[in-house]
Length: 331
Image (tube, rainbow, N blue to C red):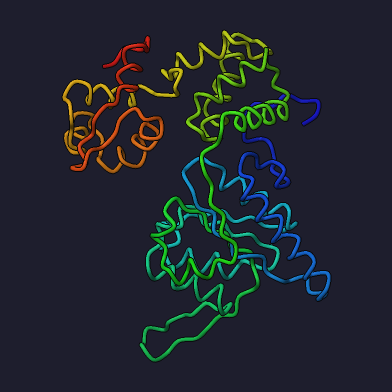
């Protein structure tokens, strides 16, 4: 895409681990295993050796899928199968994926913690014995279908929901963390330049990075894309600071990266004092699980609220200051 201008952040193909920024321990680990894999292939002369299996764990939006695509490209595999844990709980889907995977196939199971006990047992057998056990209905009958040495990658936000036996079979274990602003600046710059999206200054990139809650997914898929859409809405060809601020104003995302629902959550705590999770959930009209897994983690990381010994939610001084200083209306 050297001459053309892209229209979508996801048009850029991931071709190597060099596209994975800000996760040095992850990339170092993968480079080591990849080099060992290629050396063993050269020594033994076998081209059907399997790589991994690999477990990628960490918060949502931190680049696990992109890293899996990079592994696939580095291996030179021909087929990339992306599925998720809940889908594979349907036995027909699981069997279809495993039977059709060969030595040149990468299988990525996203949200692997959603797989049930039966699916995890089948996966364990598939990677440890390279067979697919098939039951014929009788407890004493059945047969095994041989499987090829495909590449298996599991991605999860909650690795301890996986069975111990399955986790222990993962030869490569990579843990992702949230990104520093400087790393996100580089990620946004790299993607913008790959798409030939011009930007006014480095401050544009930094503004996007600072509001992205430490995740490339927010920075790229939502914020960089929205900034470019803002530019094209008036037929421009360069992302200016004015376009960037207009985009964030439209998204209702403030300087700390808080969205309307984040500020509403803090406002509940500010108005009602120490608040049980259930009360906050009812006042916001959101399930308690959504608050715990989606809303609270970033607010806790930024020290905008805290919990006491009874798990009551309490707004912090920093949270108070942010509500007082922000220009955004709180509903």
